[in-house]
Length: 148
Image (tube, rainbow, N blue to C red; front, top):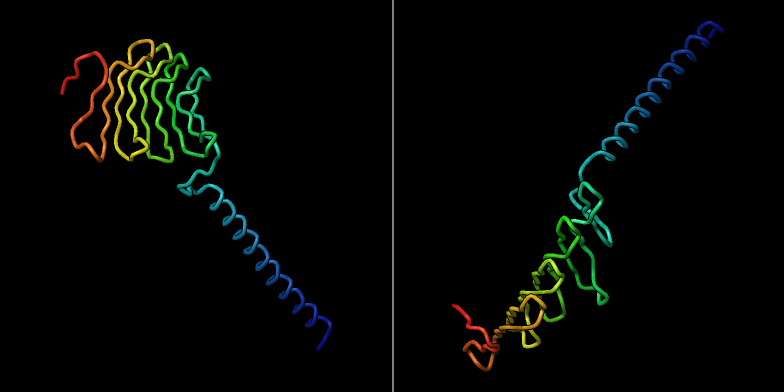
């Protein structure tokens, strides 16, 4: 084999390796870029705040001190209006007035039955209704008439 033939063979091998390396780099960059910009469908976070146009919190998703989930929604003035949470006995839903007082609560109680509470503007209970496994009828307490 002459020096020219050896040189030609080395040049072909070099071109082949350059082509293979170029394709590998382009493929790797494409894979990384594609993976980086695809939507996975899952957001993993310990806490999530959705902020409005003026930097105020609109929705806050977190957990309480016991580790149960909680979602709070806020007004434009950043006052809590709705709260949805979980507890060891089940779920809870609270509505608040503009003064920050809970005025309606729906939750499961310690007997795994439902409870509904309606409060006045100051947050004091006016009417409450709870279910009980031992008493199939509705139990009402309070001073206001309850409309069904």
